[in-house]
Length: 88
Image 1 (spheres, rainbow, N blue to C red):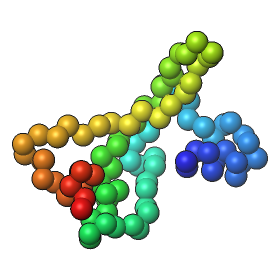
Image 2 (image 1 turned 45 degrees about the horizontal axis):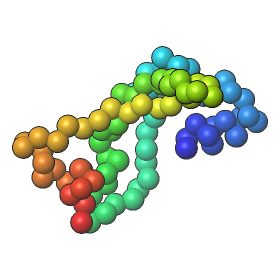
Image 3 (image 1 turned 90 degrees about the horizontal axis):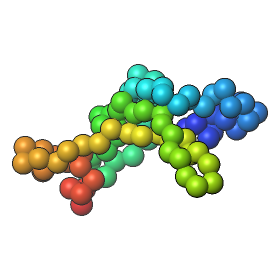
């Protein structure tokens, strides 16, 4: 959503949209929602970073997307409060 807002705020200037192949880090993009659930801010740690700007080809053309990093759930972190499944 940030890039849609940036695009609209810039008068629909596509220059504010990241380029395919670009890496977005937590230093480039912060999420400060201020929202908490049961005292936990799921955005406090940038688990999504780094993200890559990539393209997928479909029958009707190309689609650019923001591919975030994922979190592998293991025995060691299965009970971590930041995992969405653990939010009550």
